[in-house]
Length: 446
Image 1 (cartoon, rainbow, N blue to C red):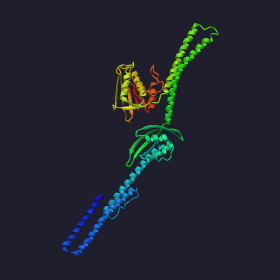
Image 2: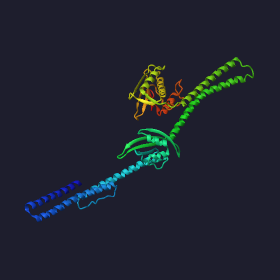
Image 3: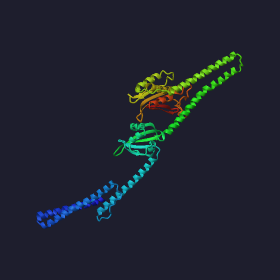
């Protein structure tokens, strides 16, 4: 509506200007009325000046309005009555736009304050910084976890802990790293996760810090309790019969009162000593197994072709005296997939998993094992071993990695715990998922 009035005003002024110019030309070249022509020339000059002033007045108002917006001046207000209808409508339109901008600014500030309050009250530390390392945001939790009140650049983290700074610098989008360091509050164990995003003017990296010390302490305590229960059970099963037999044999000789023991007593004593020897040997074997579990050598990593590794393991496992009817299939993507790992240790992990799958399928008539190698959604290399056996009951899932826990009659209970420890030494992890009656899947993630 405003533009229509302004266009109308401009068109009227242009028509008057053109008409006056034509009349001036006619008087000069045809009527020869020079005195009146001079008067018309003055009028023509006034019309041109008035048109320029009219256009500049509108442009000045609009420019002034945008300057006020650029300078965030919300007090700007144009008069509603100027004596010109077109200017009145222009001023009214600019005032409405200004009110709308003020409303939007107020709502944005409310949202900003709302999100700022949320960020300051979450227990997860959050910092954002650009490619130069300048920190734009560091919430209260991040400052408390890092023990630094004023964070403006990531180079300040060197003063907190060099290992933490190095980890932060090497952190790539999507990475999840664990790091521990000491500050005034004692030992801090952090889980760091990173992501990247772009703004109109910057490339920013967002890193979250989550204190996992309490969770780690709880899990560690639970693991110790489970391990102690298993070890206590095994040791008591061995020591109790030894103690009982020792007391029985001791009783034989206490009741002799210096007499020569009979052949029956000697025979019973020999049998008892044999049992004690057998139980003692079993206990020594148990302790030796535990020693092996706690003394795994550091992995000697080399580049391994995954396809060749799987072929060798499957060829070896087919000679196991288990269910020969089990079908074993494998695939990998891409075909030239390679990993950096200790070949002997990773082979041991895969053999343990395949033996477990074959054991679970010993009574199955259509047993199948699928081995798949490739990259997961997070871009990490993984090898999965899946079987269609009876599965693992839900109540046992949190126990299968506990050392010496087993549901097999002849199992030692260290295969899975050993496999998980090997994967941890490789900087990866071993995961398990089971749907009883459908399938069980173990995943080696590097």
